[in-house]
Length: 468
Ligand SMILES: Cc1cc2nc3c(=O)[nH]c(=O)nc-3n(C[C@H](O)[C@H](O)[C@H](O)COP(=O)(O)OP(=O)(O)OC[C@H]3O[C@@H](n4cnc5c(N)ncnc54)[C@H](O)[C@@H]3O)c2cc1C
Image (cartoon, rainbow, N blue to C red; front, side):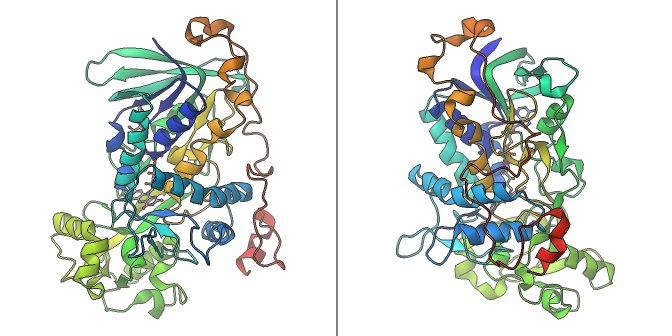
């Protein structure tokens, strides 16, 4: 049996960030992950990280875009916290050494992304997620956090009261993939599930084969509700043969979509007369499918994404890996030909029901990252909003006043607490999933209403808001 204060299951962006945050709160942390941390699927993120950093931009605009993109079904305080804290997290990454792409004057570059009213997507070439993982893994190594990589967590250790809200999570059970050895991991203060997406339940997906929704399944078996599971995002530009993603960065840089009649259908068929190819993902995916269903698709299956007009220099500078993907998987040279694309499953907006602090209804069980549902993305996540979510909400338990979850070392029984687990000081836990999520956010700032004539969105007045 291994014993720690906090066990983080999964070492993608969410797991690494949560582990760092818990460690900074003084917890003895272990990461248990079926993949080596830097092989986690966060490494596939190409496009970027949204944060309102520049003059002329504002976290309130970011919040508005997020809520609008979500079809007004996000939880407003979560949106508020997210948009407000994202810049701090991006600056933190930069201080940790993340090699962001930069302007000639040295400022971190930002580019347009679908559904954004300001070019606020920071990026590191077309390998943003890769650099994000490496930057945070370095911090984990620096802090000496224990990493059990290639350990597959199978189940949670949860007490068996009838009512899930009475239950407590004390750890998990995992096996070492190399040896087959099964071990218990005991967590005095909490288990954080950060196991990523579930795309492999779909036939055509951008998600890696490791994205099998393990965390959601474990939480469900422990009695935690799954929220918004019907909210699945389809990305409009995936390669037809494999589902491999062609980043939204291509459209952000000016890539154009054409149908079989070489019409720029986003405009010519009136799907998004203002935003065209940069409309939000659900709008563009539906438009592509409509084109195919109405007989204007190419080979009755896909449409074309053309970036030739951007020029070789710009493509090589900002989108080089897209050239490799198109060549390797479709045999297409993106400098000379348009690339075939079609919609594919990309992201689960729903997941393990939790609040802004990552708490679930089972005491001691937390969720973070794509497997969690803080209710930030509503019916549609904006491109570039998942990575900052990992950063803003993953550390939530640690950023709760320490006395609430992790009593400061000085006030706890003498370390190491492992030998005294049974007698340890009981924790108090603020709120749980039954606490209405519309309580004031961590920042205490209300979601902004850019048009005062419109009321705060709720399910009752969504229609009114759509017209605002
Ligand atoms: C192709 C692609 C491109 C994307 N591009 C962007 C982008 O540009 N910007 C953006 O904001 N978002 C992007 N996203 C979304 C974003 O990358 C993901 O939502 C996010 O990286 C998920 O991070 P995570 O830490 O929750 O999960 P992951 O990075 O998938 O990590 C999951 C971790 O859990 C571990 N794990 C899973 N099950 C178990 C188990 N049973 N036992 C032990 N360990 C387990 C894995 O080993 C892994 O370490 C993209 C998504 C895809 C698919």
